[in-house]
Structures are given as C-alpha cells and as structure tokens.
Length: 328
Image (cartoon, rainbow, N blue to C red):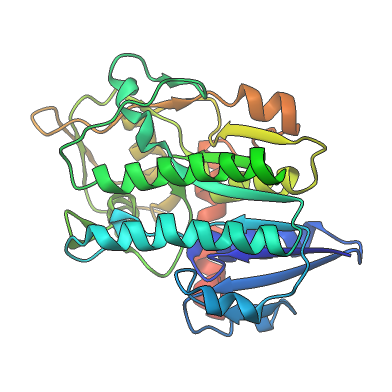
C-alpha cells in the first residue's frame, strides 16, 4: 500500500491535486491522506481522510500514520496570503514547518518528498531574457516584502537536500510561478493589503462585457500554466523511478499580455457583447518569464495538456460547476 500525505491539501492547489490524484490513481494500492490547517468537509465527497493539523506544531504529526510512502508539501506561508507583514510567520511555517515534515518523513520511513518552491529565487533573470532555466543561479532583491519569503523557501530547499543526502529521502522540487485556477477565493495581499486578483478582475469585466485596459508593454510574455498541468507533474513525480529532481513548473511557452487579455475577452464575453481593449502603455509593465520545462519532460514524461485558450475554457467550466455545486 502506497500511502501519500498531502500537506496544504485544504488550499486551492491542494484541493485540485487531491482530486486529480483520486481521479488518476485507479488501483487500490494507493491511499491519500489530506492534511491542512482549515476546517473543511471538502474531502468527504472524495472518500479521502482529512487530518487537520498545523505543520509548525510537532505534536500534530502524531495524528498521521506511522509509515508512509510519500509526502507532498504544498503548505507554506506566502506574501499573497499575509495580511500586514510578519516575517516570523515565514520562518515558522516555511522553515520550521518544513523541518517538521522532514522529521516526520524520516520517522515514517518515507521514500520521497515533493516540495513546492517559489520561482522568486530566479524571477529577476526574466528582465534580461524571458526564458528561466532550472540551473540558473539565485537572483532576487534583498529589499522587498518578498525577500524573507524567498529566503525561507530557498533554505527549505537546502534543508530538503540535507535530508536527501543524510537520510536518503528522495527529493523532488517544483519551482512555481503563478499557477492559474478558478477558486471562490478571488483575493490576495499585495504589500500586506488585500486586493482582488488581477486576472479575476479582467474575467469579471469580460463577463460583464465591459472595456479592459492593457497596461504597459503589451508584447511582454508570461508562461500561463494551469493548475491541472501542475497536478500532472506532481502525480508523475510521486511514482517516477528516480532519486531526485528539480523542475520548473510551466508550459515552456510565453503568451503576450495582449493575447492574455484578448483570450479572456473571447472566452468570457457573453454572446452579443464584446469588450473593448484600451491600450495603456503609460502604466507599469507586468513581469515577463517563460519556464524551461525540459527536465520535467525528459525525467517525468511531462507534457502540458492545456494551452492558454483551453485553460481559460476549463476555468470557465470549473467556475460554472463550482457555483452550481458549491464544491471545488
């Protein structure tokens, strides 16, 4: 029996991955245990055991099984989920929490751990050239509200490597840019202040048939990766016959800002209404990046299933389904 514990399962990405795993792992040799901080009955319908725990509390891990095959660590404190600014939370969750998960893996004889890293450690390379490679040296600002977050994620990756080399726990690191998905939660924090997610604002304006502004250089490209492709990558790494892996999460392709917004208008505009796109080159530029996914292709057999438009269409279906059923 391969028992897999998903930490951070009650978050948006965690829910999608748990559901993806259940839908794709059809043999009875797998058991999923979802673990998270939030109170939720989401997992009942999936027939998945849910354990409510705080990864910063070592005692909470006593609620989990004594032996597991793999841990998938999607838990973490990030700027988008922090009201105000409290760097201690990054240390507590991203470092102490990761150490607690690693100790649990060691004691429970886990074969492997999968970890969600931020692409903030190399994102600044995108201003020189959009293509971000797995083996680029770390390059990030030491004077932003994201600095301590990125540093804690970097240390967590190094800590996981230590446990790989000392205890033989196989490790698979996934460097994440923005992962696109539909969720009822359409807000996040910028510099500690709550705001609505930018692409959700654009979707809402498209649904209403309203005009949409295109800010900055409309030709700048971004890798628009869908949550279900990220789930595919994770799923493959759970079973791959390797000792270690470091992967950029993405599609390997860039979509220009103009094509991003035009695509949203085309997919979400109601029949008979067409959003006018208003060019605003005077406004700030969006980040630019394309994730090099060659190692994921070669080592995991990963191939993105969603291009940008098919991603938007599936997000629309998810939005309609979730609003109708009340479930992710």
